[in-house]
Image (cartoon, rainbow over all chains, first blue to last red; front, side, top):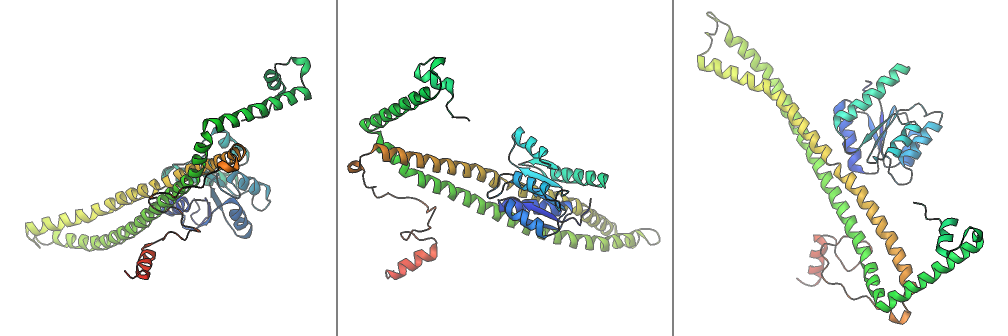
Length: 130
Length: 233
């Protein structure tokens, strides 16, 4: 895994952003920034250089689905891996995320092992495509 | 959920057959719905439920504030735990680093005490035992540090309850808001102006869950002290 990868954590709850940031650090990714909703995240993504997005779905202003669609519709961002980490556990939401190009989907509450496994899988897939 | 009336629904309400479907059926349905609504309004007023509805409505903002208060307090608690986890991890790493440095030195001591002619003659049996035990202790500390870190990670992850419960609370607050708006509309339509009562002064309220815009409460101990001081206490 590329431990220099720059992550963007998108979640409206500061507690969850902090938990994710600490977990990423434990896994070996020290380079992470935070956004409190999809709109803020999209702005950051368009004005910065990120390698990986970890996003909640249920957020004010712009939810995770809208963020995902915007990323996939943007030529400069469409190849960015997006891992959804959410409490939304309905099948239709998971299917919706997959159909809109989510790279992975984790349901809260989750473990460090799950997060690590999904990220590793996404990186493996990316390196296979390269 | 789709609440749009369908032609078949309208027909069923009106008792009309397929030949009557269309605009006339819809008109009949809406007329009946209006009639039912008026009957409900009258019944509520005659039974005195308008006051009960008014009380329910009056309590909804307070219920919303209390739920928001719970969300805030649980959020603060989660942040405190995360801060404590960060501090504990820092102390743990410091201790583990120090132990690793000491272990290297004690390994050298162990190697020295095992030497000599004959081997082991550089110390007493009790000394050799102490050195071995100390080296084993430092070797075990690394594993214990890993175990402690795993526990700290579990504690940190458990704080996700704030996110999960917070989302539920937010939905309930939104639901209460919608309910309140609907009740207000119902009350405005059912209660004659002369019967609308002024709200009574509330009793003891417990913790202030939303002090914003209120000048009849204090928000912290400094406010209490200032108030008492201004009264000469």
